[in-house]
Length: 275
Image 1: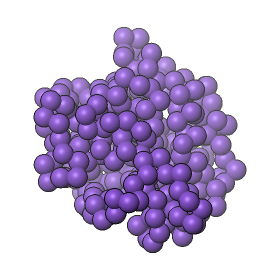
Image 2: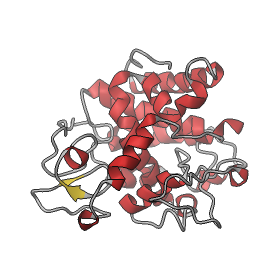
Image 3: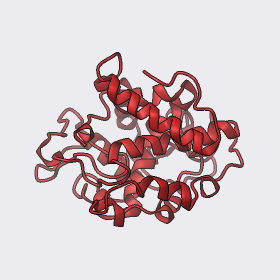
């Protein structure tokens, strides 16, 4: 479980995301969107027009790149048997056994209607397999809620001035995808509706917020690269630590989970599995 100690966003996409958010005018703040019909709800939960709002991962409104949703529903794919087959492999003493549940996951998915619904049916199934592949790897079959030894890690990026760290809080990995860093907790909280900077522990105490935070991260950073293969999702998650031959054993373990879950869903795992 030492592999949970991961820096999730040492990626160029982070800098771009921070730039986009910092460029948004204060008059357009809208944590939960609810925008006027003429405005787009951006990936960060703000209302406005232009590429920063209506482009990649636009959530609602006259989005310029919003693809048609497929008819695949998470409730039909992530059955009790499928979900229990993951968490059921966690040891009985795991904190996650009484925390993560299929019902809460499906409730959280309701806030992200494009999760697993873009592209062909096979694309949808592969995305759900990929999501649970990463969840399994990050949490040990949903055993962990909090990153092991996370409290001893420094996940405060002081250059992310829009999301200043609370010195009494830790921004280590929590939840199904182990959300980390102040520059993730801040915007995730704004989008979902909790105080990510002053109450990051909410991701580890509220199961619904926990899954929503993981899906927020997924839809903003992983979902946009799904069409590039599973290897691209590894790169987007923690490529600086794993890709380019830095940790081949870890990469192969993630590929194995993804492939196994694709097999369970009856879909080919796709090309470009490694990074």
